[in-house]
Length: 151
Image 1 (cartoon, rainbow, N blue to C red):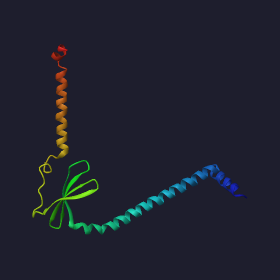
Image 2: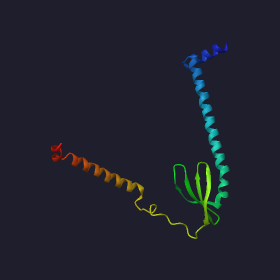
Image 3: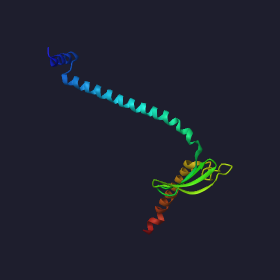
Image 4: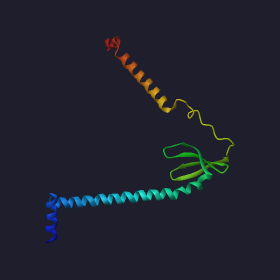
């Protein structure tokens, strides 16, 4: 008995054609290959986390104190290295030292924008409500009867 006859006999036993079996075999191989790729990605992720865990301890001497955007891609960053603050200009693939000073004894106090108890979301919602009220009041005054008679 030839191989094709055996495949056709197995397909008839399962109730499908030989092309259906070939399609299922391809689907199985594809799923298996996908599982292997996902496994390799997870393994690489695990190894990277394990290797980078030791590097975090070496960077304890370097601490970013603050930063501010001064352009679309440019920032001014204050970095503390041991007991010295470095003011750095960062942008365009370059880092330039702008200023060097001694670190203060006490940590910097947050600005008033950061200490706002309401937070951005509540301030934004209040501004949005006020804007909506102003827009509706302008529309209602534009639609008033004495304004219609003037047009």
